Length: 196
Image 1 (cartoon, rainbow, N blue to C red):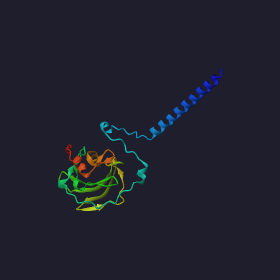
Image 2 (cartoon, one colour):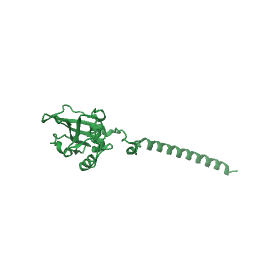
Image 3 (tube, rainbow, N blue to C red):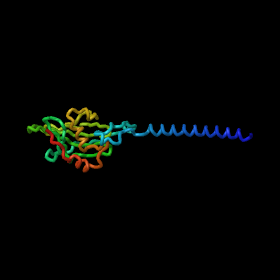
């Protein structure tokens, strides 16, 4: 008769341990799932990258000093497929592309009329991580005019659409930059549909 209380006590203790263990596992699972990146890892197969994830480091991000607009040549520019009907033809001079340590890709894009009109150019920077573009200067009448109070803007809102196509065709790799300028140029040189 004496072993019975000990057995009852042992069973109760085992039940308490099991309950405590399951509670710990549940809390650990919640903690690990809340910190997981829920972006679709197969975005390339889905047809478009997931939206950029805003992190605490974005608030601390600071752009590096912007150098003056580089010299460009329309003769060496690579055509951009804007996938739409427009009288303007857009191209990017590969010699002007620079990838900076702050994650900005800077370049000069040339806009010209198929009828032989005046050539305009834009000195811009793209942040692949946030899908934004900034125009630093505009080239018109043979000279650069610096943009006053230039700001970062979502490039999906740019009406002409050439910035978005530039990022898809080679300036960005998802929400990051290419490894090097050489790799960026190689991606841009891939055959694309001719701009109409």
